[in-house]
Every structure is written in structure tokens, then in C-alpha cells.
Image (cartoon, rainbow, N blue to C red):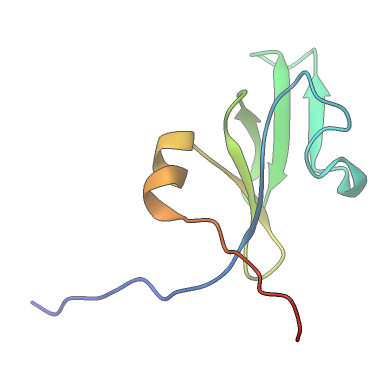
Length: 88
């Protein structure tokens, strides 16, 4: 059976904390609070529709500009911080 490796890419991500202001990606109106939802809380608008997010989840901007949540354990196993080198 063929094996595949995930392509390396750099993403933008912010960790969600409902107590911080402004909220992650707030300037893009990505995170919204819905008190009337079946499970009241904060939601992120994704390509598949609104998804409930929790404190500690990471909000990732994908390669096509889409947003989606990621569990902190999965994020830690999948991504590492990119240290940008300054221009010389």
C-alpha cells in the first residue's frame, strides 16, 4: 500500500480564550457568541457551518483563507512555532 507524508505548510493560528479581548480573529468577525444556540457558547464560522469552540482550542486559518478549530492536543502534535528570521 502506498504511504503519504503531509506536505509542509505554514499556517496562521490563535488560541481561543473567551476571557481575552479582543477575541481571536475578532477583526475578521470569525468568532461569535450565540446565547440562543442549543449549546450556548462561542462559535467559529467554518466552510461547513458554525462550530462550537472552547477555551484552549486553536483557530486556524487554512491555505485558502478558511477558518477551522483545532483541539490543543492535536495542534501540539501537528504544528510547531515558526521563528521568522529578520532581514539582513
